[in-house]
Length: 299
Length: 206
Image (cartoon, rainbow over all chains, first blue to last red; front, side, top):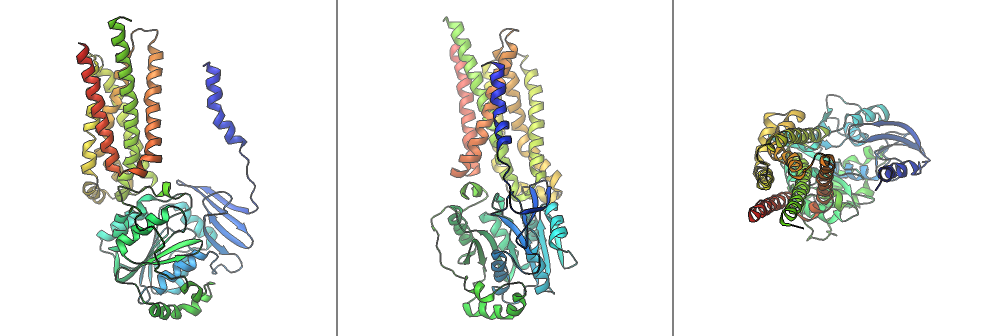
């Protein structure tokens, strides 16, 4: 091969890249910034403002707010996650840990719903925290703090310091990339050891793909039976001390019914999603620190 | 083809095989290194930065040392020795990850220097030996000044191509089939086997 041929070969991928259609989205791009990890984008569309980590933003919206009523939850998973955190706990949680901030809609809501609670958030990407503040009205105060740290590192450190939480929300996945060390048996075990008696773990995750089976057996291996709430997303609600009965869930839900209505959450609709039915392949290999191809399985 | 020429060809082929496998080995270890560090240090940009820094630094110093060592009675068995050394000094990686990394992350809580120390401890020595392979191979392959650039080019090609193959195979397939330690152990085993073959092949000739 001549040098020119080599060059042509080398330039081909570049040409393809440039020729790729610059897909025009209907949504209005309000803000974009490139962080150390990803692009953080803010789009507005049909009265909603959303945080996205990918262009176009059709799937995998991280957080959305309704511009006319910012407190109102725009995404279904946030309703399910809130249901898990509030209904499955035996009483109002006083210490809450959230891994993954996004637009901060859940911690902001919890701050209002649980004015006495201490809420800690671990978010690895300072750009996400900044955009949450500037575009989603997220505010930190003495009772709501963000730690700029990898979630796994935060959990390990909190465990060593003897911290305990009444509720932990795992919300660090996005459609494009799963931090694989946050979906292993060892990690969930570390989260479990952070729980105070009656404490609850809520995981926001995916409802499709081969990963579903593996994720299910991994959670089951650590927590036993758990509630599995499914809509477009999947929300797992686990309580190692034993799951609450339906009556207990209903009782707890009633206490928040009117408050949640202000957030656009229909308590009954969320309650109806709670089920312990195991609809996965129980033989799927458990994910561990040694075996965690979560991204390869998530297709 | 007379005996001498045949031996030269065989030696060249073995050199290329060792260089390819060495490249394959290094990148696989680097990728899996990220996984081994993640439970204690996370997978922040600092951890990957630390890991890549250590690998590049170890390789660069290895190149220097490999070139230097090639001036003293260069031979195929000695090249094989380098390959075996890189593999065997990677063995502690299997044992050290876990408890030791956790203690280290407690001792050095800063995510940058903690992961830098951990990566140095686990990966510096085997990567250093891997770096020695390429310049040593160049010495064994070059027989004339005119062809030296061409030989070096071929060698870079083979070893970097090996790195590419090691990267894609590990990240797309191997992690789906095997545990991290199994993949590492498999690589170490192949390195030792190839080293034995290359070392012994020379002895049979002599």
